[in-house]
Image 1: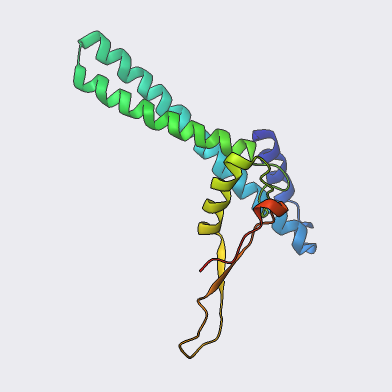
Image 2: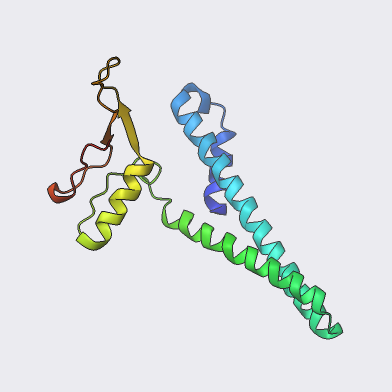
Length: 154
């Protein structure tokens, strides 16, 4: 990551870079992203070292309050590292784009589709007036197998 950022910094300093606006924006956008990720990693590393030191001090002075604080910091760091792992797994070329999913297992997919329908639905309007006005219909935005087709929901 550092090598890529250094290479992009060199490219950003080239005088002819801004002759191609799209290329220049792509370079600066990627450089900004990499700088942010490197800063995040360095911050996590520093905090991990600080937490290690807190545990060592808590053990040497038999300080339960310091140990509890270090444990809270460690739990926070684990959560941050887990999120970083997910971001790393989803950092491919196409991962910033929308996804089309297909759920195929019947037991889990029913629950999944209910959850998706709650989150990703759009209302389409029926007749606007009268007592026979139909309730708004919802259309599922996720393509599913035929047996899981998103029914009209009242």
